[in-house]
Length: 157
Image (tube, rainbow, N blue to C red; front, top):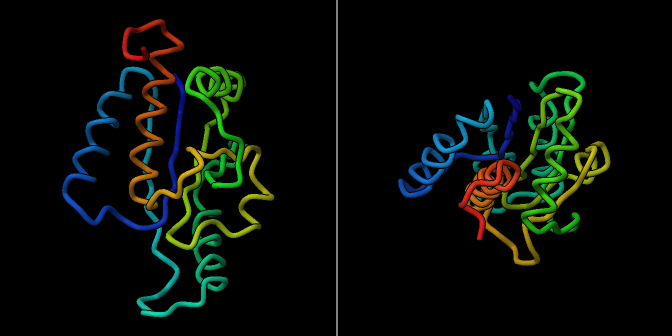
């Protein structure tokens, strides 16, 4: 069984976000052990934060706590855009060695360049800019879709 860890900046701000996250985490249970870890936003409550400092603080938090030897995937708009079947194949390849997969999702200012450069892979969820709380839901849905594709289930059409 795959072990997937998602480290994301911030927490859901709306009840529907929490409900969607919970739904996809439940759907993924038969296929993978998924841990969702939320780290604090780096703006420290400032109404006009310094974007560079914010990303740097968030990078420090995102880089901590996942198992050594994990395969790290950063989600970033500059990353490779994969269709769902390709993502399914990549997930199978990335997890073949049994190492945990760690997905990193930045905050509203994006990811610090250091996170992108240290990741084993950088992928994009599309060309649109997504709010970071919505990106978490889209990632979970795509992970579920990928698992159903890999198993020949009817979910993906």
